[in-house]
Image 1: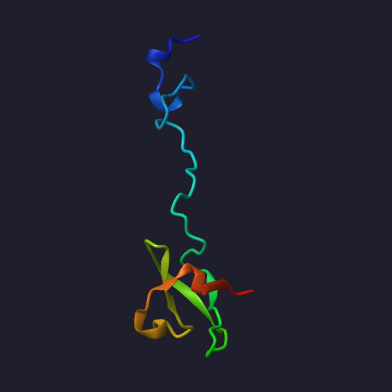
Image 2: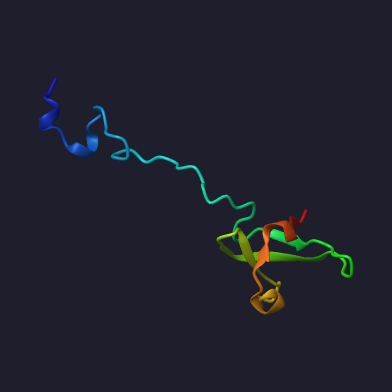
Length: 90
């Protein structure tokens, strides 16, 4: 068997240091309930009915979201909605 030091490093199966070598999947730590592309509705308020569905356009810290209509225009001129104002559209 050949010495590992003579092998192509991309083919070496020896121990790796954490974060090196093989690809891995990191946990999504953003804390967002919705992701860009998700369809959501805006929760009903005392004077408005449930609105939507709309598509999540961008996410922001908070977590907050901008939404877009089916024609690509932003909902409420790009207002950032709090997560508790939204629900998944099924």
